[in-house]
Every structure is written in C-alpha cells, then in structure tokens.
Amino acid sequence: MASQISMDEVAKCVLDGLENAHKEYFKWSDGEYIWSAPEYLLTVNIAKELKKSKEVKYLTLEDNVEYILENANVECKGEIHKALRKDGRFDIVLWGSDKEPTPPIAIVEVKNKVYCFGRIEEDIERIKQTLLMMQSTIEFGLMAFYATNTYKGLDNNFNGLVEGLLKNTQECLNGKSGKEQFCIEKFERHIQDKDNIIDGNVYRPIVFKIQKK
Image 1: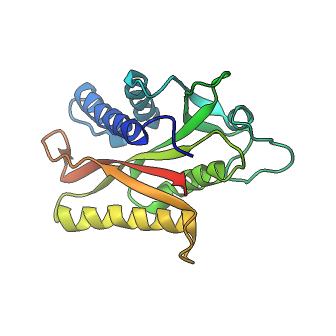
Image 2 (image 1 turned 90 degrees about the horizontal axis):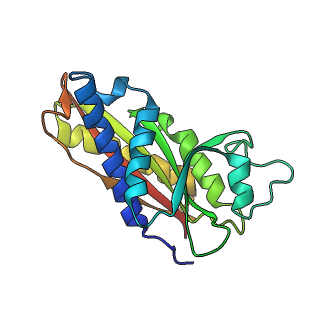
C-alpha cells in the first residue's frame, strides 16, 4: 500500500529537528554538546519541525502504546510482544489521512548518546513489532538518533560505526536468514563545523526509515 504522506519529507524534518536540538543546546550551555542534555530536548525539537510540514496532520508525544494500537485498528486482546508493553509509550506518533477519525500512520523513536547498537536495539524491536501488527494503519517507523565517535580518523571510524548500526538493525528486523520482511533506508547529515566538534568528538544526526515490504 502506498503511503499517504512523503516518508522522505518526514525523515528530513526529523533530521532538521535533531540538528536544531544540537545547536540550541550548544548555545544555551555555552558550548556543551547535546550528549549531556535530556533526550526530551531532541524529541521536542523533532516535533516542532514535523509540525511545520504539510505532510503531518497532527502529532502527539509520549502516547500510550495500547491507545495508539487501538486507534490503528489493532485488537489488543491477550498478550502482545514484550517490546511493545501496553503501558509503554511511543516517543512521537504522527497522525494524518483523509479518513475520519484520523488514524495514526507513523511512529518515531528517539535516542541520544548512540555509540553502539545496544543503545537503539529495544527501539528497533518496538518499531518492528508495531509494523508486524495485522491490519494496522501505521505505515512506517523512524529511528532518530545522534551518533558519536572520535574526530581522529573520522571517515573510517564514524562511517564504520554507522554502517555497523545499519547492519545490526537489518539483522534485528530481518534475521540472518536473508529473507527480508522489512526495508530500511538511512538518512544522515555530515556536519563538520565548530558547533559539531567538541573536545575532539564528532556527532552526526541519523534517521533510519523502516517499513514492511
């Protein structure tokens, strides 16, 4: 089923929000990096950028998993996958279509301080299990995060980190058998200015767009 909104446009808005959070906190703190800021600052800046887009009818933050799944036409009877937790919350939920009542159509999970796959593994699993729900109106998920690595040897080290995160995400979504249930696309910003290099470190905003095949 073709998406009712431009997923690439939404991913770009998320990158803008990540970048804005970095610049905002850098200014507020007189040079401190977003690494030391609460994760919620990333979430709020992403939400601000998403709301500017005509692609998004409206959005909610920290919305209850069970409530969202019910609005997405998913029956939550009995046990659901432990990655979802009925009393858990999605960081950002996007709503919007010509249908009434307006259904949720995408989820965004946000993470700060990503230096290894373990930092986003639970979020990737949550997106996966959400998209596996039959007859759900949720079309795709976004994993939004700031990754970090040392500035020395940036091209090799940082690219290796990002590719490793991508490979592990693919394996988490599709297993190691080679049978692909999901497709994943990477969006990232290569920012190497004075606001992005602090104490010898480089940071990169990244979004993984995930959808079922």
